[in-house]
Length: 335
Ligand code: NAD
Ligand code: DAU
Image (cartoon, rainbow, N blue to C red; front, side):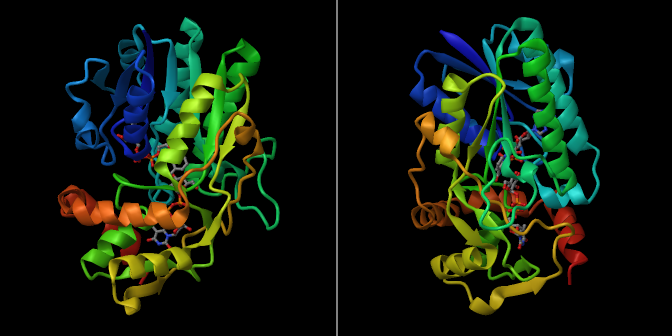
């Protein structure tokens, strides 16, 4: 039996990843360390509570003590935990640096001291926006545009430095915009879907022509699993859908799937520093054996259906005071 520490396993991608690791690797135990921030929802992994190969530790990756307690007996670490929302980072919170930079360092220090395998789950946002027809390759320079992206780029650089300086067996995945069940309803797809079900406006930033590569969460987790087990030390791997979609098209598809009023789509003030386009070249990951399995039409239909059937999950979040405060701050000023 081997054992892996996954951070952020109560969040969106983390909860899918923990479930996948337990399902695909019968010889693996999974420890989930999660601080349970606003985005960490124990109910996302409630179905795993009785699994003897699963352990939950309530803790902070920025605390060396919490990390040591959670990582006892582990052979490796997959760092999924992060402050993940660009708009919140623009509001200026310190937690983006504490978790995404210091938290990464704490995990790296532990991995180094105990000679563990390490995987950093990162993002295409570290490349900044890229002009067509270029697709980012792993050796491109890092240019994070938002405080979130800058903090993730700092995390990536720390990982690469530990691989080079200390010989740590560490790799990085850089995923594109991911969607699916359990995504926190502050992000484009779950926000627009749940607003549409409630007859509310869909606030489109700027002209809506910003391009994202929408990747179904199961495809993203399959790549993380593959790179954790077979990726090379000191290497990064892009994980993208290689299918570009402008936000306005995503919005129109959600309107069709939910039957919302097309007039509910409202243009609002743009996100400051907004990246126009991300696009990843994933040849390196494909050479490792990965391929995207779920196309956008299929994945989006599945996702909208999940949000339709799991109203209680997102209503509990959206009816809370903290969510209302965030919404007022983010959208109040946009008109
Ligand atoms: P999320 O916001 O849904 O979940 C983050 C999780 O991390 C939550 O459970 C939260 O409680 C936990 N967490 C936050 N700070 C912590 C701390 N200090 N210690 C322990 N746990 C902490 O995030 P997500 O969308 O699932 O993203 C997961 C990772 O994937 C992030 O690293 C993000 O940068 C990366 N990523 C996300 C996407 C995407 O589109 N969602 C795409 C590419 C990469
Ligand atoms: O690309 C990977 C990144 O994808 C991850 O690193 C981040 O953690 C994840 O949050 C996501 O970042 P984005 O900023 O791309 O996701 P978001 O859902 O916030 O926005 C997607 C696009 O939709 C972006 O161009 C902004 C736009 N948008 C977003 C919101 C919330 C709107 O037009 N209106 C909105 O209300």
